[in-house]
Structure formats: C-alpha cells, structure tokens
Amino acid sequence: MMRFIALFICRKCILNLYLISMLCVQLLPLPSVSGFYLARFFVKKSLPSYFAFAVLGSLMVMWFVVHNFWDLNIWLGGMSLKSFCKLIVAGVVLALTIPGLALLPPKLKFLTEVALISHALLLCHIENRFFNYSSIYYYGLEDDVMYPSYMVIATTFLGLALVRRLTADSKIGSRAVWILTCLYASKLAMLFISSKSIIWISAVLLLAVSPPLLLYKYHLAPFAL
Image 1 (tube, helix red, strand yellow):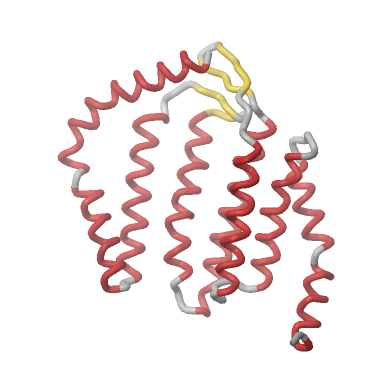
Image 2 (image 1 turned 120 degrees about the vertical axis):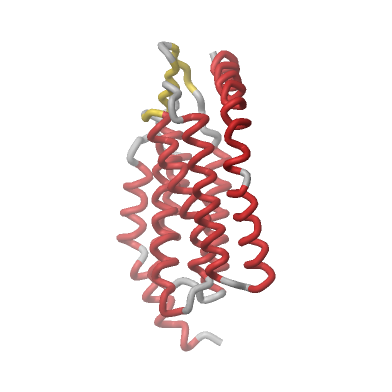
C-alpha cells in the first residue's frame, strides 16, 4: 500500500518535471533574488532585506506545494492533503518571518510573541492530527501510518530550547514564555493518554495551574542571590 502510494507520488513529481523545465526560465530569478537578499542581510544587517528574502522564500514554497501536491486525492490525519498543505505553508511562512520579527526594536516584540504563539498552536494542531488520526486514504485504499513519538519529543524540546534562548536575549516577555511553555509541554501528554483532545485539555490545564507558580517565582526573584 505505502509502496504504491510512494510510486504514484514519484510518478506525479516526474510528470511535473516537464512543467518545471518549461517554467525554470521564468522562475529562476526568484531563488536568485531571494539568495541575494539573504546575502545582503548577512553582509549589511539590513532588516528589509531579510523580509524580502522571507517573502520570496514563502512564494517559492507555495509554488512548489501547489504544483506537486495540491491536486492529489489523499486524506491523512483526518483531513485532505490540500488542507494539510495549507497548514504546512502557513507554518513555513511563520518560521521564515519570526527571525526577522525578533530583530525588531523591543517595543515591537509583541509581534514576535504573536508569531511564536501562532506557530506553536499550528504545530500542536498538526501533530495532534498526525498522532491521533493515523489513517491515510488514497483513491479507495486505506492504511494506518503512525506518527513517531520521538518527533513529538524532539519538537517539544526544540520549542522549549527556542523559548529559553529568546528569553535570555529579552526578545519575548514573561506572558509569552508562559503560554509557549504550556503549549509545548502539553504535547507530551499525547504520549501517555490516547485521546484526540488531550493536547488541548493539557494546555488549558497547564495555563490554569501555572500562573501561581510564575507569580511565586517573580516575587522571589529580587531576593535571589
């Protein structure tokens, strides 16, 4: 079953090579200009150059997804592949935008916080669908695909490490740290309890019980040695 799906997707990609070759002359400036702006950002530390790179990079991802996966009649994680592609594109756009937002002046750090929280919510939704809705449907054929537990653990600790680093650099405030920590930690509940809504229940529970701990921590901070 999975081999048949993989072969069909490969054949679909091969059929798209002709279209890619026909459009390569038109699309070649896009990655070239994107690379130019990224290099300009590293050389001159120009923030507009980074956002130009983020916009062009997002356009390239959108084009690749639409031309290779948009028309496939596949259902996975309880949703169509087209809906999943929308989530992936949204995640990539946020991931490309967040580094630029983190370089903005401190008075605009709320933009970084909103983007990080949105990305964390999106990641929780995608992993919840993959982990708890393990079936895949493809042109009348159905199979089960298990989302690996180590991926949940890896994304959780990577997210917590990112929050810790941004906190140390004073890029996000204490409220954003609290929300992000609860969201990333709630994903671990999927590994122990089999429920399609456990991640959201855990997130709400952590958000409800953790404020007293945070208040106690910041209350004692001036007295710490």
